[in-house]
Image (cartoon, rainbow, N blue to C red; front, side, top):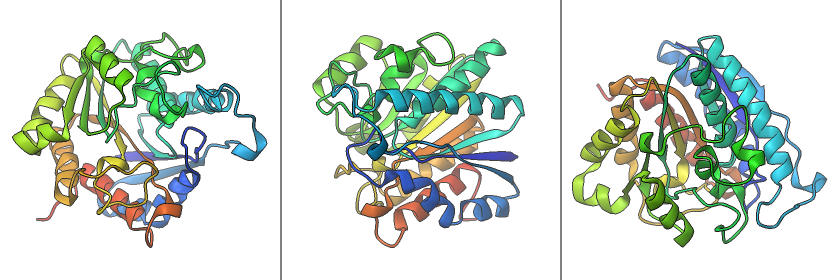
Length: 301
C-alpha cells in the first residue's frame, strides 16, 4: 500500500499550546520506518503551513481562530482529495482535532465525484459535536464532527461541497466519556451512533467494535477512521491536551485498531491531539505509532 503522510501542525482549535508539534513527535517516534517494516510504501507530503496564534486575532470568542482554521481546512481538503485521486492512502497527523474538518471534507469530495458513500469511525473521549452556540470554550477542536454533519459556521460546513459530508447513521463514536449538554442533545437529534466507555465496560470492546463497524459500513464504500489519542487513558498516553480519566487501556486501544485492520474497510486514517509539551519522553507519540502499526497489520504472532 502507498501510504501518503500529511502533517497538520494545528493548535488553533485547542485551548492548550503544543499540539502543533504532534506531527513532528509522531515522525520522530519512527512512523515511516515502522510502516515500511510492514511492507508499505510511505510518501511523506510534509506539513501544511499554518499561522500561529501570535500572528492572528482570536476573532469570534465562540469560534476562536475561525478564519485561519477555515483557510487551513480548505487546503487540507484539497490535498486529501488529490491524494485519493492518486489511489494513495491518506494518513493525516494532527495537530488538534479540528483538522478532521479538512480531512473528512476532502474524502467526502472524492466520494461524491465517484458517487460513493462515506462512513466515519470516531475514536475519542469527547463527542466533538459542539457548535459556537453550545461550546463552553469556543475551541473549534470540540466542533469538527458537528461541522462535517452540517452543523456550525458556514466557513467550516461548506468546505469543498455540500454542508453534510457524512450521514450521521454512518458515524460511530467509540470510547466517549465526556459530553457537554449541547452535544448530548445534538447526538440524540441526529441519531448518531455513540458507544461510551460504559458500553465498553459492559459489553467488551470486541462486541462494541462489531456494532460500530456495522454502522459505518452500512451501505458505504469508504470508511475514514479518526483517532483522538485522548480516547486512551492518561496513564497510557499522558501527552494529550484534554485528558479524561477512565479511558481505553493499552490492549483495548490496540484491539480497536486490530479489529479495524481485520475488517479491511479502512480507507483513510488520522491520528490527532499528541502534545509533546505535556508528554513524558515522547511515549504518547510512540504509542500513537504503535496504534497505526496495528491498524496496518502488525500482530503479536
